[in-house]
Length: 173
Image (cartoon, rainbow, N blue to C red; front, side, top):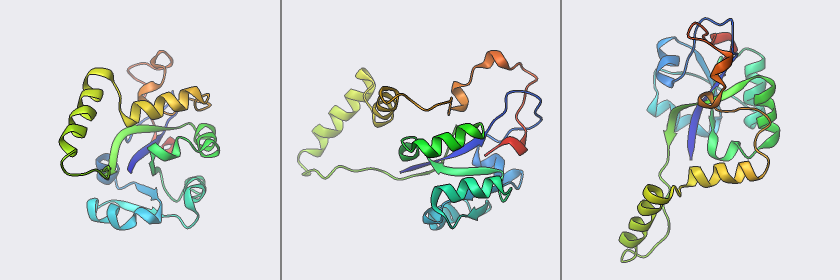
């Protein structure tokens, strides 16, 4: 499971931007997060100001709308397949940053004598063929029609912005 900081973005007339958990901590910004991640997030980021939602992922969006927080910590891998949630993000111009808050290693149940060979082929697939969980998920989402808006900060069209355009905290999630 990977939880990413999701940032709310507008493309013009903005002053500041928070693109990572470290920046959110430094600026003392409240971060809405799911209570299932509470123990891990508090352990890894003890100085962060987390707001714990009571109502699953929709509660995070409600908390954001109620101005209980300025950024969200949500998982990308599974949430990108949640069309209603992605529509909520699109309506609020929210995008995923590349900042990773938590990572949990994923392991395959395999016999010890087969593990080195499996590891080799996974590495070869990533390195030479571009096969990875992230790429496979991206291809699946694209085949399913993709999200109704750009959900990646890095994927936004920079032609609508210039070097003076920044992102305001009030527009972040």
